[in-house]
Image (cartoon, rainbow, N blue to C red; front, side, top):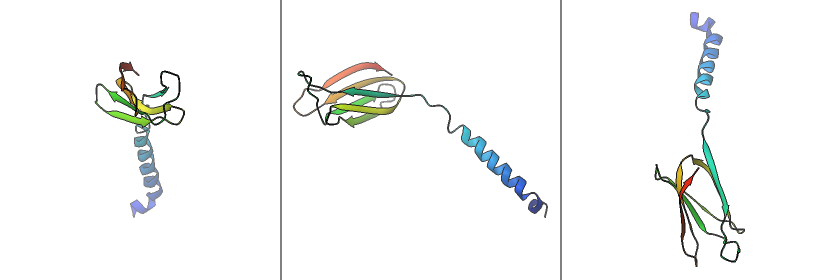
Length: 101
């Protein structure tokens, strides 16, 4: 019967513990966003080019396609050093190394 009397207290206690434990989950994460535009030698936009950012430490890769304006955005990249490559049909592959985010 004691539990029944203290039920509101226990319910609040459990909610408080859950709330406190979730605070660590929403902690700060440090990420970067890689944004750019792919264009040809005549400054014309290159649509549908594949842009890949490869993290040198973790070997994780993040890939996107350029839009009709040649623009791309790769959000939420973990901070680190990357190799970024761009490929498009009819064009030579371009690779940039040691990109630090």
